[in-house]
Image 1 (cartoon, rainbow, N blue to C red):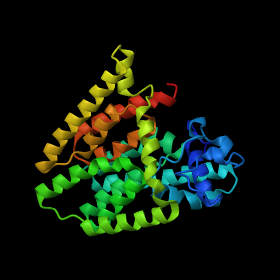
Image 2: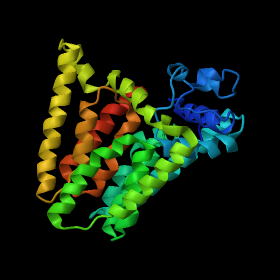
Image 3: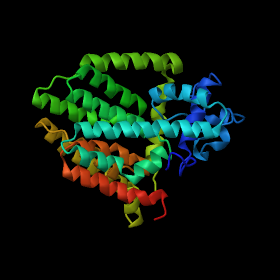
Image 4: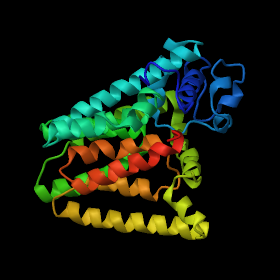
Length: 319
């Protein structure tokens, strides 16, 4: 139903379209030239005002992939929305399948992700690119579980080059692999990284690294439903609230690293802790935690992911 509706709740899909057109149509660099440099572009009136002066905050693989999508959409806002919504919906369906493949209780895991209304609204309805990252993370885990370690390494790189957040999982997986004596795909990881760095640099120069700048500025912003903002509403000074959140995440991550050193990487909890600590929290970020939690035999992580989903559902849906 959300896939058949107009673009819902967020205009991010049109922002992807605009950045893709900056590169594909205008032969410019979306990491150095913001959309306001092309105000006559048909995508420009549709993007959120916050992005008019902002260069791309997305990974270079997503920007490269956005170019042919923008070319296929042409000057049609409806076509652009439908394409990004369809791609996100397909990515979520793939994520559900991979989650079920990895899980011990497959039907339960598939229902936990596939029946989540938050994911339906914001991916089939909103077309957010976090679905691309999620399907690549789950692909990396599934390939690793199947013994295809070189391809798993390549999938990890692809996920990171879509959205940097996937980096959070890698140290825990590496510690778990060391503890269990599991071989990992260093060659696949290195070759994929080299290929993507070369492709991104050929297209965008080294400016794609500047995506970290807007991303850091975005992380410094607060959203209403973020837990540090809730602390501030209770009278806690902003710097103290942010420090408490960062400190809690650091302690939680160190505890998870200790567990991974002993042979168990709890990725669902790592993502859940990050969502709880983040000052910038929007509903579609729930996909960072939900699939990995559903694929693990970790009820604590699953309950946390479901609780975060239920909490975030109210952020943009008046219930």
